Amino acid sequence: MRELRRDPVIGQWVIISEERADRPVTAPVEQQADTGGFCPFCEENESSTPDEVYALRDDGSPPNGPGWRLRVVPNKFPALASEGELIVSCEGMYDRMSGIGFHEVLIETPRHDLALADLSSGRIADLFRAVRLRFCEFKKDKRIKCAQFFKNHGYTAGASIERSHSQIIAMPQVSKLLKEELNGANEYFKRENRCVYCDMIDNETSAKVRVVAETERFIALAPYASRFAYETLLLPKKHNHRFEDAGDGTIDALSVILKELLKKINSILSHPTYNLILHTFSFEHSADDGYYHWHVEFLPMVNRVAGFEWGSGLFINPVPPEEAAKRLREA
Image: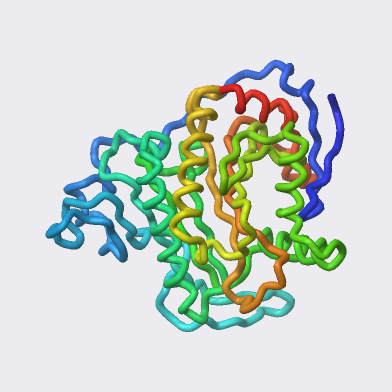
């Protein structure tokens, strides 16, 4: 099977080439994230991080000490800093702005030996509730236009520390990909008078071939134009453009289906490295006409991004999403 497919939201084309999976590969030695004896994120090492901005704690346990279940702390090595004035300027033809923003680390468990997949769905829900809370805080800062929650699991997915954690970066500029999603979803809405993501849910629920898992509130599916093998999209069935507006029931349901997906992925791919990414409406838009739909993206690092992808902007996926969804359903 060889064909090109177009993403219905941003218009990006991908190559589905099943035959690429048969090519000979010399497997590289997998580099490891920092696995040294000392971990700044472990319980009893709270003084090694900046002061927490949020934590779930045992009754009576002091801030920045032991007795926590989840901590959120400023990144010690932030990409953006919260202090200062947002200044936009230019240098000839080049635009720039001051590096204002927030960069926080969410430490998901006090135990060093547990991954996200090992946590209960309730503990995963605690993580997403913390994300919701932090997003609500960032929205109050008029300098901030959007926030990105993400998790890098494993060295090849971008993690520099072995310990399970995730991050949020709040930015003074709407990211390029979010702009593309907003524009694509808006154009579809203008043309069809419907949400493209809601139509996607209806289409996939009817066809069944790319559905990975489904609950009353959520659907997990392999996107029609998947860039990566076993790429999976988690979508709330009820239309909502902002993640921070999600209720506790929705977050609980997200956590249940995510845990189920992680179990399936680990069964098939033997605990791969992956990226987990939240896509939600920007803060700078005060109103929504119904065209956007927040969602979570799961990207296992199975096929690597190489010269062709960087040069062309096209991705080559060696596992058709229909086959990936079938294997995951049966796992």
